[in-house]
Image 1 (spheres, rainbow, N blue to C red):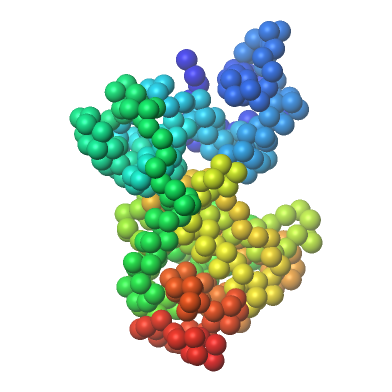
Image 2 (cartoon, rainbow, N blue to C red):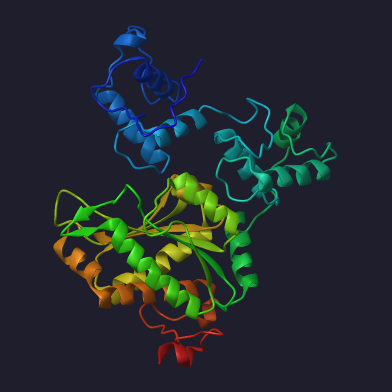
Length: 396
């Protein structure tokens, strides 16, 4: 029997912790060959979260595009559980209330993509798009199209090879979806997620609370995007919060084109500064959201160019909000509240206006065809946009 993590934030194990849960985590790391199998290992009650185990956890987290802090919380434990599954180990089927997750599903999704089927994002979640892609595969190979992966489907999958050539299938598909959606912002739907809220203030430094700063910024952004014809939804109100899973469920219900989560960062070293952008992706494994990565790059570069923040680059991550939203989702960490200069910028109405404009410009650039795009820091949007700007208008 494997131990399941509790659904509370109290599930947290780190170096020097002991007990049966630590023994369970160690056994999972051993099974993944991240720790040696020691026949002299202690009994479960005496198991210790030692330095070697912390290093193995960090290695696992880095490989899975998680925060590599060496601490096993609910998210890391979920990934440890998912990592034990290989394609063919179990029957795979879609469940609306409790979707199956695991590395076997990610492998299935990648195989389907490589053969020209569309299972949605390669995220290891057996959702409705994956079930539909399985049905299409079964129909095309003479199997019963029930959307369930059992022995017969696994046997046929094992005999077939990749048929899509000329690039990553998901990049081609997402690029075509962007092209078909058209260059105009009018009619696009965006979810805005102001980080933290409710009982969780986020970072608190220099008299500023992350939750309050992000709420003010999102309200400015909502107004600017509405003027451009974009329909927006907010994941929380001024005084409420919610988990990443709650926010992802809300976003999925809107069927939006894109979601943007706004945060700041903090660090014990006050010299840490700059803007980071995150999108769903296992870059080291060739899996990422092409649209998410594109928008993350546009937004980060525009903010750096227009607002004077340092550039901490874009990074693929598998955090819950990025992974479980069905639309491309980007998280922007807008400076460090612990840095005096970044905090001063975030407190400035002028800087907030520039940040809002940077994000709006990045959104427009995402949908412009390459021949109509403009260099970073150059594109200017009118107060109300009903059609994409020409190059002359964009650079004026």
